[in-house]
Length: 141
Image (cartoon, rainbow, N blue to C red; front, side, top):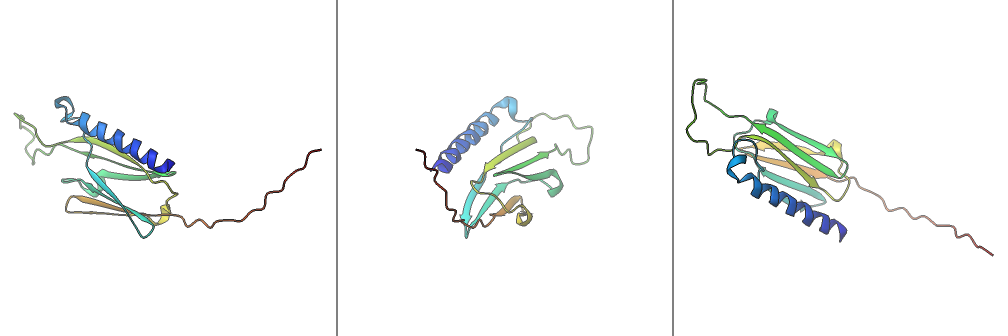
């Protein structure tokens, strides 16, 4: 229940950042790439649209129960350094997305693949065994 609330708050924050990134002042300085998050067989799977990115320009970090995906897309002048831009509609710059996972990820088994402009991150979770612990009760007189 609490995880759902935090997920919704994070989703709202990401949506606000995405809307802000649409403003004309932000077009060249940064953006928020869209993503989809799924759960399957005890794993979280994230698909993020990153057209024009190379794997070396993307960084994925695990921070406790959060996953941070960041990167930079540089303006490509296609080899001509003397170009003067008249209009820039493609998005360039830095981005950073933080995803609350709810459970502790098994960081050694996180996999990421960039294919045809889509980043797929598969995150398995640590299998926590429920422990049965008897709590001693102190009796006060």
